[in-house]
Structures are given as C-alpha cells and as structure tokens.
Image 1: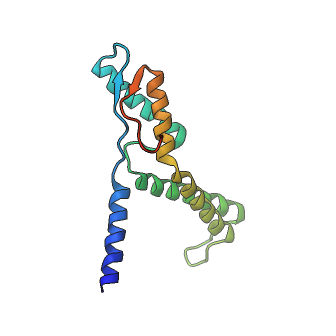
Image 2: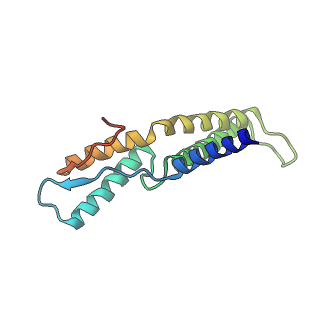
Image 3: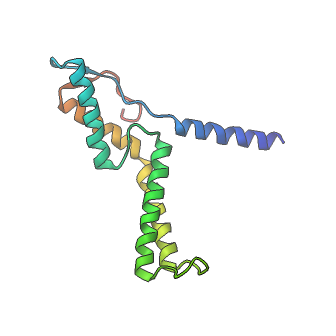
Length: 143
C-alpha cells in the first residue's frame, strides 16, 4: 500500500506543478512609459508571441499541451478520414486513415508542446526589450 500511496502522491505533485501558470519575468520601463502603456505592451507582446508560437501565456504548460494534442489530433483524424473515407455509420469501425491521422496529430501536438513555454518566454522577452523595457530578473530557463 505504501508504494501505491507514493505513486499517487508523485502523480498528484506532477499534475499540480503542471497546472500552475508559469509567470513571466518582471520588466521595468527603460524609457518614459506609463503604467497603462506597460500593461498594454505586456498584453500585446503576449498576444503577438502566443499567436506566432501557438501558445497561450495565460494557461499552464499542461493546459497548452492538452490543447495542442487535442486540436492537432482531431485535425489529423479529420484529414486522415477524408483521405481514406469516413465510417458510414456509428456501428462501423474507424478507417486506417482516421486512426493514423489522429495518432500523427497527437504526436505532433505533444512535440510542439515540449519546449512551448521556454520558446514563448524568450520571444516575449525579445518583444518587451524591443519596446524599450528591461528585464529585471532573467528566468532560469533562459540563462
């Protein structure tokens, strides 16, 4: 029973750490930007970089990974089903293209998510520095 309890505790710890939203580093104005301009620049850089890298900076890395696996998995299944034919009824079995497309899309979604947060953070820092802010503390992942 102790082995099972330890395994459950480990899984719970991994899920809790994966569900927490990773904070972006603090920035300070290098020019004469107002607090309102600072908030707008933070939000604009988040949106711009998030769109480019398919990563939502307001979600946890785990939520981003689940979203990528789900979206790319279903997209792959739809594409594979269109290529080899979709099942004609709910009683029929899935086609090979449907299964292969879902698998390939799920794998691609997982692969994209592996370095998603660090790529997002690096690009966000570059965006903020380009707008005239300096990074107060460099995060561990970038050092």
